[in-house]
Length: 207
Figure 1 (cartoon, rainbow, N blue to C red):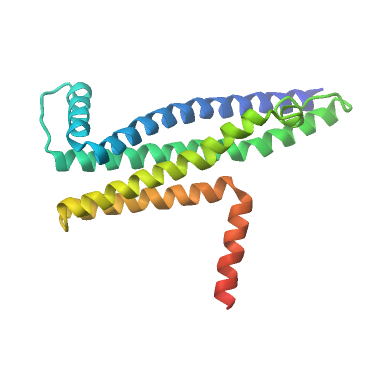
Figure 2 (figure 1 turned 60 degrees about the horizontal axis):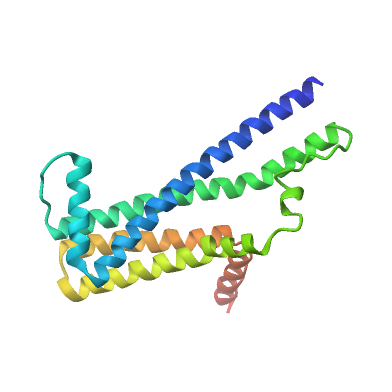
């Protein structure tokens, strides 16, 4: 039984790491939604968004430093990019762990002479509720596309209002990073989309 004990301990540790990552992912998503809400407010009412950002800086820095609107806008871009990257890292890790946990459960089941040990794999997917599919679509399709739309709209407005400047160029570079990370994230969590995109580029290359 020593082998099964080692395998089960490894399973428990892997499951705990996955749960910890889920908690961090959820926290990052809430923060990202809040930052994107400020970005949207920046589009429709920039003065109110600047006021919110300024208040946050004063509160969390515990100082009375007043930053200009240009610096605050760049700060918001940086915060969005950082939070997005952390969210993608956590969620990608979690997605990759699902298959590994399934393999561990299968190995444990075989060691237990076929006893049912599939809480996080086959049993979880059995009669999967439609509402969870809807929630999955929200997280993996709706939210990323909505965030991309908000960020593109915001950078377009910045160019219209400020024109070419060092701040606009820096913000555009960060925005580009956000869009690239978002698109690659969508491809990473949707294998079918990734394969279709890969075939399309290969066809164009050969053509």
